[in-house]
Image (cartoon, rainbow, N blue to C red; front, side):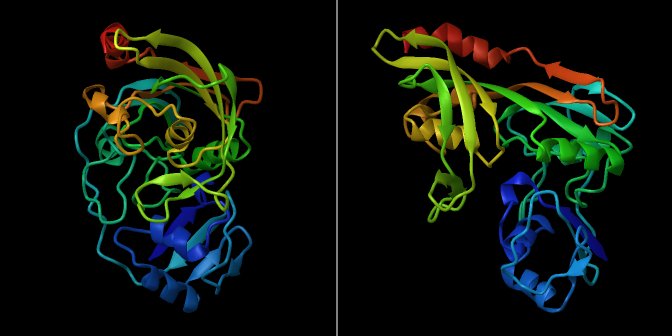
Length: 312
């Protein structure tokens, strides 16, 4: 059996064994992956060479092929799910991903994901991302709602991935945060890596990967009790895991409803995570003179929070 995996921005310059452990299948141990590498089962398809070093640094956009003895078939099942389509073409589409659903299952996680819904609702999806990630070109965190591109063909998957790799996709987010940044508009340039102790979290660390977030304060609300909330417009120059959540927490303005990165922000979890991928603007992958712009209205929970937050 062959497993195909492509290096995303989150894993650029990661060790090969770490990248494969997280991306080549469910419930994989690092020792299993290292045995694959030692046995010559792993090929860098981009460079057409077998890789034998566990610590080999992978690069964004590279494709790897793992030739292994067949494992039990994937337990992915089509599951009915509400997936609104915002833009649709023969080879790709843009959808509205709802909050609370992961884009795909992770190692050891069999809970329903967006992929299960895609398999139920759509006949054709690209297979480039592997059996766990059909159609998935980029990701949004599980609690994050917003616009997401889905590839229907391998050709589209490769072309769209290249757009992300070349940073040609403009991603606009909005978030309600606690407090307000010192500067109303600016750029946060702080490297992000895995938290050394709490492995489900990311953190700012010197040896992390470059992470750049642009922000602009759209509105500040002063509450009756002296608290302050701000509506932020955010743009990502890079796409690290939890990037906005980590950066905003680091500058003292955690996203409202973020129980992972703020003790005080979790007091408002009835609204969910108030981070919203509102807009995507990108060149058509095959038509040079065409741009695609897809934008969502704010979810009702954002509007409810804005009405109620002055009383907090």
